[in-house]
Image (cartoon, rainbow, N blue to C red; front, side, top):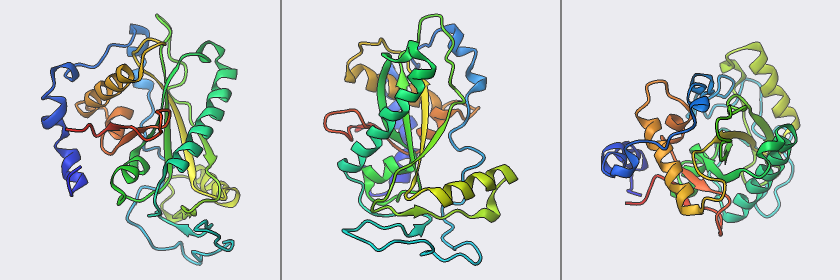
Length: 263
């Protein structure tokens, strides 16, 4: 990446997506999936704090409220963002949480139990892994599945939130004054009271590849999906993910970069 990650990312549409013919058009999903796109929930959900630069504690709240003593860098201190180094060990932890989520999803949808083709970390945490400067607010983990031919993707609006657990990243500080609704406030207070670490948001999406596709094919398909997202006016999930970074959690070793693509 260049010294200025934002400039680099802003240049991707002209320098990469539109400059490489194989990424000009996305791989096609079955028609049953395409007509469901209007159901897709945007990445930046209405109940997620929207001011990433707000570093002021909530009124009457101490940053260290409920903190435990730090050991080997592990902390439960609250902050808007953590700038601790994100390592492969942390990626392994995220992959484990994704595996647990896959088990939950597969119990509800057993037809997809053997169709997972990629597990990724996206958004700001992925960019922090790439550039070491963005910081970690929360973790967005996206699992992708080969679609069932002529089937309808059942989980565009599915989300789960789990606790990363104690780590060097501490805990999130929620600005309750910015909550968009009473329901969001309740969720934030519940997470603040029960989570010992950063929140992990888990999403699932279809990806137009065969079940047995190798990693190179999957990465090409992910990049095509992200390139297509940059040109969409409805700002779907791909649009939001393409603004920052995506890395594989299931590569060997974990952390292979999908987005932004290398030049």
